[in-house]
Image (cartoon, rainbow, N blue to C red; front, side, top):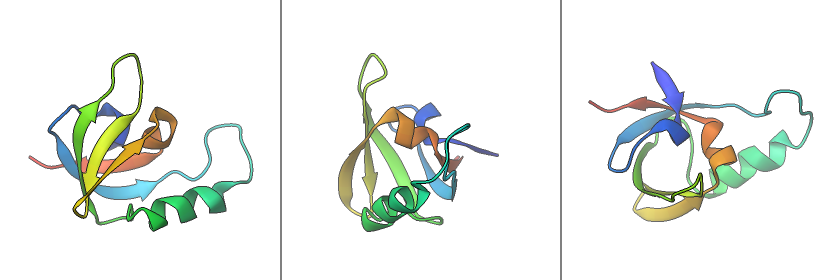
Length: 85
């Protein structure tokens, strides 16, 4: 079952299954969002690991393809992953 990346705890990892392009009630601007994720290497089928989760709903630091990235919670809520067991 796919869950949002924002729900993973520190140290958990998973495989990206899908990306929700538009948040509920918003239109447009999805192409820029998808392009930004692709440029960072976040594509379906990619393994991603949560390295650190900032307190008070701050950004999430992830490791993907040998690089570390910081993602805002809004962005992380739109990336769905299948959790590794």
